[in-house]
Image (cartoon, rainbow, N blue to C red; front, side, top):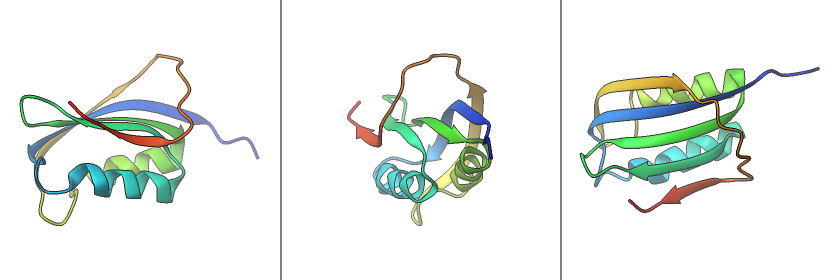
Length: 95
């Protein structure tokens, strides 16, 4: 079975820093078999680069609408990413 791959850049806005959002995002990505990274932005939002099978990436996007237990997500922006770097795992990056 050939699963189609998807790669997106997700920007999550709201109260998403200081609430373990990145750690929960990493855990969810690992659970779904997604590679890429999550990083805090200086403006208080969080970016996630996610690559993996279509249904898994869509599942992570859906998770971002709620986020970690303490998070208050206001908006989730998703755009297709055309880069071709390959990530072997899902990392938490500093700023």
